[in-house]
Structures are given as C-alpha cells and as structure tokens.
Length: 302
Image (cartoon, rainbow, N blue to C red; front, side):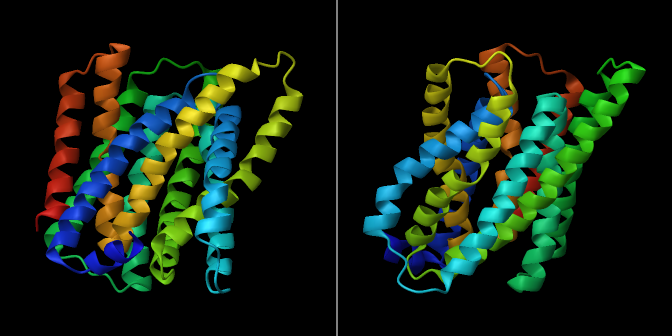
C-alpha cells in the first residue's frame, strides 16, 4: 500500500487522489472537532481520544512498521511536541469560547501560514489565482467568526474570557500550520508513509493524556469513565481518517493545496449543525460558506 501511495506522487491520478483525501479529511475533521468540543470536557475528551488511537496504533508501529533508521526520530519528536502544543491550545480555547467562534479562527489562520512555510521548505509555488483563492478562503472563514462574534451577547466580565479564547484559537491556528508542514516533511522522508503514520498515532498517547489526567485530578465532580471511553474510541477512529488522510494528501500532492482544502471542514461542520443540531443558517452565513467554496475551487482548479 505504501508503494502505491509513493508511486502516485506527482501524477495526474495523484492530484485527483490528493483532492479526494483532503476533502475526506475535511469531513472527518468537522466530526472530530464536534466530538472533541462536546461531551464531558475538551481536555478529558482529547486525552481519551489520544489514549485510544495510541493503543490501536501500537501493534502496527511496533510489529508491522518498525523504525528502520534514525532519520524519522527527530521529525516524529518535533511533530509530537507541535501536536501537543496544538492540542492544549485547542482544548483551552474550546473550554473558554463557543465552538462557532473558536473553530473558524483556528482553521482560518492555518492555510495561509502553511502555504508560506511550504514555499520556503518545499519550494512549492502557487499561481496568482491560487493565492487569491487562499485569501478568499481564509478571509471567509475569519468573517464567519466575526459574524458569530457580532451575534454573541457578552458582559464586561465575559469580555476578558472571550479575548483569551480568541488568542488561544489564534495560537492553535499557528500550530496547525507548523505541524502540517512538519508532518508533510516526515511522511515524505519515510520510505513507507504508513511508518510515519503508525508512529505518529502511537506517540500521541504519551503526551496530552497526562494533561487530561492532571485536569481529572482537579475536578471535584469526576465524570463517569464509560462515556469517556466511548467518546475516546469513536474520536480515535475519526482521527485516523482526519489526520491520516491529510498526511497522505500532503505526501501525494502539494502541502499548501491539501491544507487549504481541508479547511472546507467549515462547510461540513455547518451541515452537521443544521442536520443533527437543528441550527439555522441565515443569508450572511450562506454567503460566507459560498465564499469558502469559491476559494477552495480557485485553489484546486487553477
């Protein structure tokens, strides 16, 4: 399977596959974010998810895709640290701010910063229409956050907490760009891309779960374990598709294009909100969603 993925890089078939994987990642990430935000607590949710996907990945990392050399070790360690920072920023933002505000801010920053990093690290160039599409997509995502913010009633006491959540979401967006770039470098460095994926998920269980444990100990009313385990297993399965398909897309196609297309998760998240949570979408949000789609089309079909 790894050889097939590698052979598709730089081919017309690979471009189509990278598009499909990026959109698949977008859908999965919208579901993943809802799982992480909802339920008991964002910190505990994320800790449970990481433990579950680490356990699931362990036999593959240890027995099927062992590290044959040391080249991947520093990249995996850097990726581990960047994801740990991102997970903390995201959980902290989710715990302080609303999903409809925090999520768009974090996702809006990533594509532009990733494209700039890919330009310097991978020498990936985008044509003018793609840069324009990138700005349209990111700008539309940000405007969605502004629309949601404008309709939020806050007191002077809540204003400080709101600003903190915005700063945390901004930090999460920066780390999204950093880990996307490092992960793309790692999966391209690996002879078999699934070696990087297996070890990435396996190592994920040795970071944020300890943050979640510290959070657990501080809670006066500790939640039941069973619902947390169920959420962790479901979230882990979604994470394999969300993060795994994105990394494969960056192995086959351009990092900047894959990162930008993944942020169409905002569209899927809106659809989930309408279908499952009976949320209403007004004209302003429909225009924003349309602009996100237009930006994505400009990036991919240049």
